[in-house]
Length: 312
Image 1: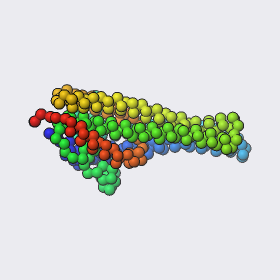
Image 2: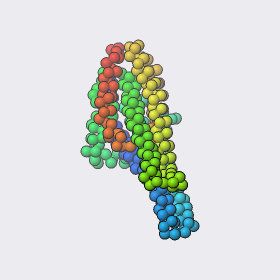
Image 3: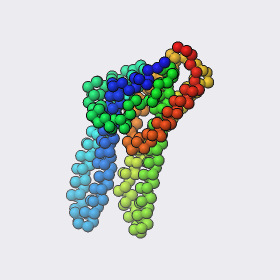
């Protein structure tokens, strides 16, 4: 009744999976570089400048000149990297859209997504995993992304369940990322407090160290808020998908044309989410991969067990 299991692992579609994964890996690397030169290094340089001024009597004017020059350089690099990261994230999201539309058989939306990524650009990005079959097997297996066996269900219903998997999987990652951010903020504040108590710091000393660590705390806080915003959007769409699935289970039937229209609307939300949300670090993906695979194998089995479809 559907072609999902066989189409998700064709060579062309696996190339799309490889390409988007490699682009997201690059995005994470450049985001880390941007974080280091924009947040971590200025904090270290500020501490170094304070030491040079107080202990070695380096003139404030000279330090200010060098810090100002570094600030201009970082601003330029930050603007360039931010633009590149945004462009690459949209490119990766477009390749994911190509994979979804091919596998789930959803119509392409030129108005929302724009034109498809050319085959040669997909091939260039996919070569990283194609040339490293062990890494590709460890990350993707040989079956593709959505299901590990063929199910006897209509294509549109399977596509709806696959979107439920997409949003549910990502929500679990962002829940874990939220915990990581809360831990980071808490540890930063606790370390400052502990240091102040152990060193018997005065109020002026405390303010001095807060000023130096404030950019780092601010960065983590903004990332936490962005991640929570992404999670709230996921929750809204996931609730909508779950309601549609529940309606099909209760009614025992569905209108295929109506469901296909809803699938395209859901796919638009998927693309918007991927193109704008910050990616989740790979170590969280790897740590949760096995559990999520088990959860969503059960997700397909349990939902389809409660659905009945007319003979085609």
